[in-house]
Amino acid sequence: MDKNNNQKDVIASIDIGDSKILVCIGVLENDKIKVVGISEEKLSVKPHSDLSFLKEAIINAVKNAEMMSGQDIKELYLGIADEYIHTLTVSGTTTIDPNKKEVTQAHVESIIHSATTIPQTAGVILHKFPAHYTLDGVTGIKNPIGMCGVQLKADLKIIVYRELDLERHRKKVESAGFDVNDTVLETLASSYAILDEEEKELGVTIIDIGAASSDIAVFKNDSVYFTASFNHAGDIVTKDITKSFNPVISIARAEKLKIEHGTVALSNILEDEEIYVPGIGGQGDVPCSKKHLAKVMHSRLREILTIIAYRLEKSGFFDMMGAGVVLTGGTANTEGIVELAREIFRKPVRLGCPKGDLGLGNSIENPSFSVGIGLLYYAEKYRKKRKKEEGIQEITKHLKKVFSKITELIKNVF
Ligand SMILES: Nc1ncnc2c1ncn2[C@@H]1O[C@H](COP(=O)(O)OP(=O)(O)OP(=O)(O)O)[C@@H](O)[C@H]1O
Ligand SMILES: [Mg+2]
Image (cartoon, rainbow, N blue to C red):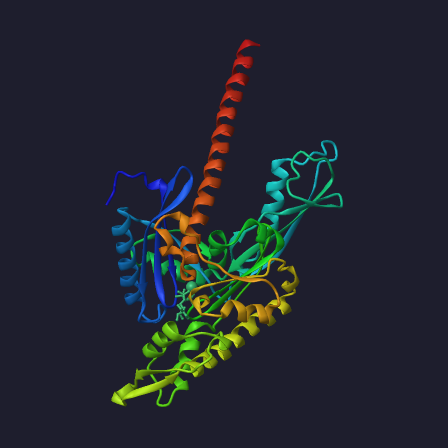
């Protein structure tokens, strides 16, 4: 392992999905991320059902990514998704001293502090998004510092989660001997890898259809307006396939059949074809019609997308998605799913994959890697922000020292 490399410039992420563990390692070169290691550990056991199995799988995934990159990893950015994570809108107000009338950094800090002080029962804050200010009735102000007024109000979105659940996610990584740098909502992480700034400006929804869950997030400008997750995704499609043949086929065979021959583009199947799959318990080969397979997948995925569309409509944010929908997660690989989603959402829909110009060629262009790669972008962004804040703190400290020396000198002279 390259122990000489400055650890500060190496970033690592982990996505513990229901079907795989993905570890990505990136280095910052000229302020840009380059992916130097990636390791996917397929899970044969559900990650929440056996913690010692999970621990071993995490250790293995990190070890493989370390070997590929030549870097030694101690800390990881962790992606999380859960139905109990949700967005809240919070606000705070303050009155500016009528003699001075000018909004200062201190006013902004105190108003954000009061807006984001939430009761313990509301959970812990995972993310805070930039506030929009109203000064004496004038709305839509992004930065009020230096402006004159009396009544200042801030409105912002925050993402909250149950404290114990957050702890449970962190423990998975910590029990494998690694520290967690930060926990990040998975769809937010993906947004850095797969969305364009223009899409966020117009309003866009990410739908991550993985193995066990489908995660949704509506983005507009710099905020996440709505987030939800529900337990229907690729696994249930596989289960449907298993049961739909006579005699039934195993989960592993159904999964292989789905990935190798599955489609929801019904009109593409002009002539039917049968694939012979070994049956369970030595029952001989089972003839599986491609048309039948497509119908089973189409029916379940249509149902999942329809439920998502309904939830978005109920949330009140459906009309905010000017740029439409970006589908990601492994199930987004299904042939014809983009067209099916266009029909259901009646909005622009595209597939979201991390772009290959990050290093390692097009091997990272897989919708199943959006969270892992997005976490590296997230980490890069927050490191830059932290460096800037540390820089400002240093300058303030220095100025304070200079000021106190001058005061001292003046005292001594007079
Ligand atoms: N070519 C394909 N066609 C159809 N489904 C696919 C294809 N490739 C992968 N999948 C499905 O994608 C799912 C895995 O996706 P992903 O890696 O995003 O899930 P995960 O992150 O492990 O799970 P989750 O996010 O639900 O915890 C599996 O159900 C798999 O069958
Ligand atoms: Mg996932």
